[in-house]
Image 1 (tube, rainbow, N blue to C red):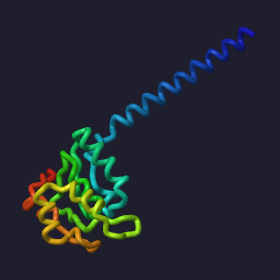
Image 2 (image 1 turned 45 degrees about the vertical axis):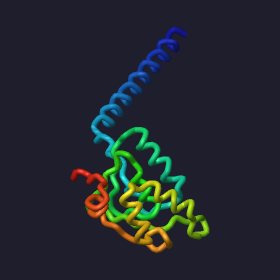
Image 3 (image 1 turned 180 degrees about the vertical axis):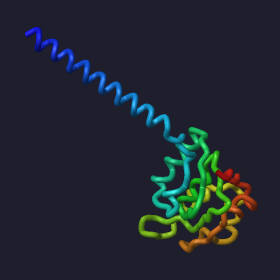
Image 4 (image 1 turned 30 degrees about the vertical axis):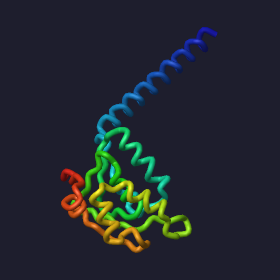
Length: 157
């Protein structure tokens, strides 16, 4: 009986030692990973439902973290321009069109939602040039978004 108790205690100690070693190894591995990068539009560039984009905008506006618009950014992806700490990569391409419902009918509500994400200069430009009258895409380069409309340029990393 004494032998069984001792064997169990040794097994428990050995298990605890293995778990502690694995936890230490895991902590070491995680500490060697690079820090999380700033948020990015990569993966969201083709647009999609507002319900996907609006929470991201809210999250980044709450945290104040930087968010990068880079690469191809069309439709709902342009909602990221509403993020307080947004920057735009000079080489990005942003594409604008009218907002629409699920049946792809132009919707004034959806268009107004998109327009509300843009600063006054960009809002006036896309409206005056009829970018938001139809579902046809109209592009503006990241360089123009920075130069003409005053959005901050992302640092080169």
